[in-house]
Image (cartoon, rainbow, N blue to C red):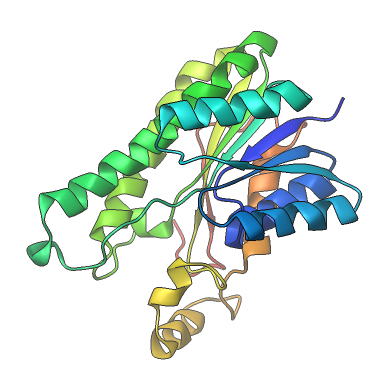
Length: 247
């Protein structure tokens, strides 16, 4: 029986690319969305046209009841979720700290960790029962290397990365791996739209590979962590930035 993956925020960008790739590699994929029903159905249709299995499932990942209902729906058709790719991006404010309110910074922190908490809690029972699971969280290079105006997103994603490390420590004995993929700038995503052409040119010039990441580049890193045979990497963070930043 093929594994079941749930990808949050999968109607476009990195989430859609990840859903398509996991399906192409034999997984049955739940394509989560919040408002973009038509886009999510397009992703599902493309997967099915290529011979894969997928379904669109709506839920606000910050709402416990909605997420539990989504996971139950996937489970009623395919069984429990084996692989969670938590990619959904909650809203955030772009501005300097000195102009920011606590509601803007604290609200993003709360949304980020609440969503990760809620979706993880919902999928863990099936994973712990079978003593196998893959949890992959989408972070950002901004959590390590600040950029002007991005304190809310960068701080929240840094907290998400530490959350994942604690889960890796706790869940490893149960056969569940937990890893984070941290993209640098990625084209064709909502975040990329905040950059002007000059900023993009500077970022390309600073990247040894000579271009910015595409959603498919990030999806391949996610798929690596989600794979059946990736049994010994957990608590790690993979930077997908073309060498723009090297630790």
